[in-house]
Image 1 (spheres, rainbow, N blue to C red):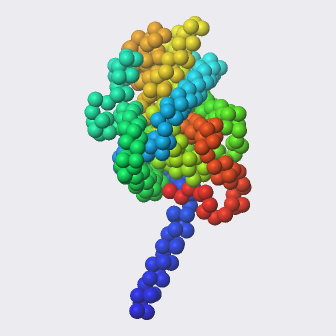
Image 2 (cartoon, rainbow, N blue to C red; image 1 turned 180 degrees about the horizontal axis):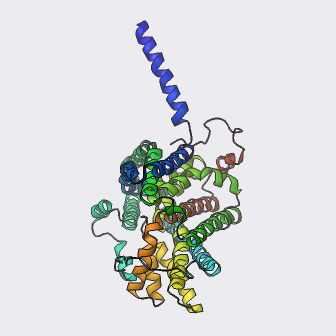
Image 3 (tube, rainbow, N blue to C red; image 1 turned 135 degrees about the vertical axis):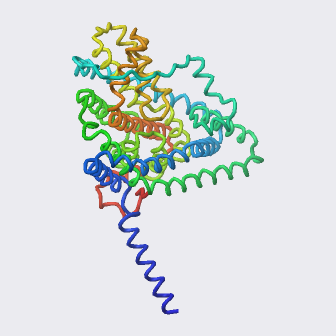
Length: 444
């Protein structure tokens, strides 16, 4: 019995040590050192570090495995939680309007930065290999694709807009059952909670995945992955910073009537995940946890606006597509008219809102913008081939802004509708160390 007690005590001590040195450390504080270590490993091992890509691929696949069922169950549970289908329609119109307006501002900013910095002026495309550009779909085809012919196939394919449509449609059906639908509503709510529990498990391996992703990228391309096409990278960084610190902070202050400090502090975990994985989908689980635990946003808003935003929160993409279009126009020696510039902004915004949440999707949307302003398919493919080898870092930056846009818009919607606990949000304004340990802290 004494030995058993000793063994139990030893297990408790070991668990406490593990908790102290890993689980109690906020996620972003574990990811940043892993990011730095990955860069160092890539520099030291060179091309051999590409083998570490497996670690990153495992993490990304685990995260992507959860996305489709997570979106389905969280949106369905969120809509059911609203209790009134009419309220859903009002919320959807407001959310879509806010996402579209924010993306339009971002696209205008990207075009302005392109005109200011002239990143494509004098760029030589010698050596660039044209990349195949997938045929674009017409507007009617894009709209029809939102309605899935086979919902199970949409889940299997990860077709986000189709999944969202069916989840909302299914939830409305459950609501119309009234009291008879309550058992099913309870099951869906439990399924949503179970998916969030799985998210916690998966996100614990994020630092390992980030280490592998960065080691492989730097090992394959060296530091050139960070310094090539410097003016375009500088323009992307400038656009992302301005969109996040001026536009997004402005929305928090002017529309939500909230201090921006809790947002900037609370959002960092999701922004680091977005930056390191270049995936809006991978950061969604963290966004959902932050929205409820740190921002005090009610689940009925968080579980509807945020999953929808994975498909349409595209500020970073809209900004980058417009900037990259200006880069291409300048590199090809084209003098754009005022009408061309307006088309760049409008088409960049529309395409960004329907962009899939996958790495480098903006590259091929840029080609669609160029075709609209008269650039040939071959020239567009040449630009894509020139930029694609260096797109990893650029994608990381713009994905971060996409995720910030999603969280900001959800916060604004919750504040305007009175669907948030403002005292929970305000707790994030306290300096580190003032709040009680563990209170409103996200430890994924």
